[in-house]
Image (cartoon, rainbow, N blue to C red; front, side, top):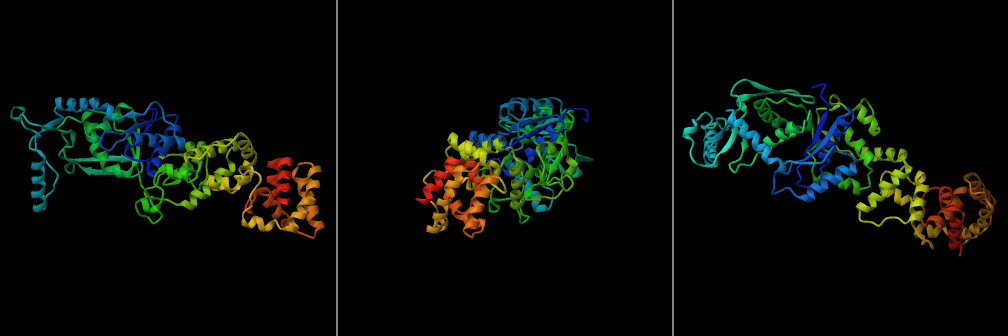
Length: 467
């Protein structure tokens, strides 16, 4: 299989949002395929018609798109391939590798109750396995695969190692239900084979499924894909991830203001490592990602690490790309877009406002001085900084700013010289200036704000504050 182009897949069930664990599985498949010039396919496992919804499918597609995990070709609907799944079951039936089982649910349950009472295995062995076709009744039946009765099966897993399962522990799995519809276990194998999947990278809660699915691969004479069953994500307390741990769906992380690049980096490090590297780009992740780097223990969600990585990614992000994602964030929250002048101001301020920010909300908070409108209404702390003495000093600053060259060194010199004349430290003069420019005391440097706002707007805001 080493010469075969790599083809991976992500196969979610559309019964709800894109879970953070599912997103990590999708990311691992995407990284593995992209790093090897292969294909990453998407299959929607919508065979559960009662629970599958178009809205859930849409949520999954939106979540993957936000994360930046592009897939090759159109998403495959598993339900739309039911005829093909049934065709495989009938082929196995005709070759004697599967059989019709007429046992009713009541008969099977009666057997299991008796087995439990006697302390025997409840694994059901159908009396119809080797029955003569002439003895078949005119009654509903399921189609079961003939599992080997002796020996053992080995799942050669790239994460878990070799997992051996005795064949006498496997039942004759149902392939077709009595209404003729294929089971999930059959559909998965047929789809993976037909889609040319070379590597099945999925949660280790599917590890037991691998043994049963291998029954179909073997019966059909198909090559078995390379398995990699990855441990699940746990909460900070080491217990299975649940609502009590906070955000479970990918869209919640978008609404919390995390950028997609930081999420990709963080999710990649949840259960996989490359030496001691914590912060890395997509290209590095694609180059480095391999199955050997996946640990066997469950990863733990850690919001502090996510915040730290977010700060690193925001600090190095392309300003225009970060602004674009900031606009997408506001749109996702149902907030209006920015006017052109605000967009230009935000882009000019981005090097300043993204510094040390760990979410888009923090960027917006720092960018308040751009997004607000004149006349600025100062908050309580800012109003206190604009007392009569401070206003008088700001009036003295105005003519100096009117003639200053609008560069940081000269602005610093003008403000610093005035502060010195009044026997003040620069910070003492910066406070009322900050209040005049932003209307609040938490903001970027006054000089950064002045450079972004420009001479005319800076002087207009100071005039507003001093009147």
